[in-house]
Image 1 (cartoon, rainbow, N blue to C red):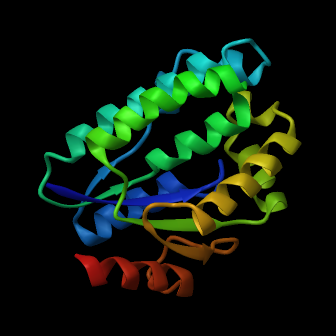
Image 2 (tube, rainbow, N blue to C red):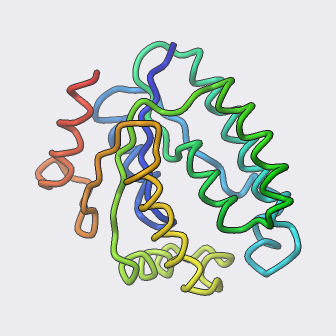
Length: 195
């Protein structure tokens, strides 16, 4: 059964880039979420009334990816944590919608569990906003920066206080994907301890 390590952080923190880099460097399996496969994401960011649909779709996509990864032997790096889905749901859903979401979320957690370890990429909000702008995804660029600030704060609080996994918080404001970067050396060291 695969051992899941999640690279987490706010939108724009560099999760996917880091997972791709580390997977290649360490020779591990990886799973990455495909945001564009969620048919509700554009409408969600435009303020459409599709919050529950958006959150349930992400939860089921993550469930499917983790179920498949669980069949793999060895370490698997993921650019998301299933626990992130609960943070988004708490941020975006009404109490009635959250009850519906929570029933499915509990089933998913019972089925696939949570990650063994989370490496949380902590980037100041101004850095996140700049990264979001640079990567240029229209639905993110046009979103209210206050949404990202609120999400970033709630996500970090969750992983610092409530996560079921062991969590390492890494200051990633100047994380560069090269083998001499001090922060990257720190992350590789953490991973090599559990390989």
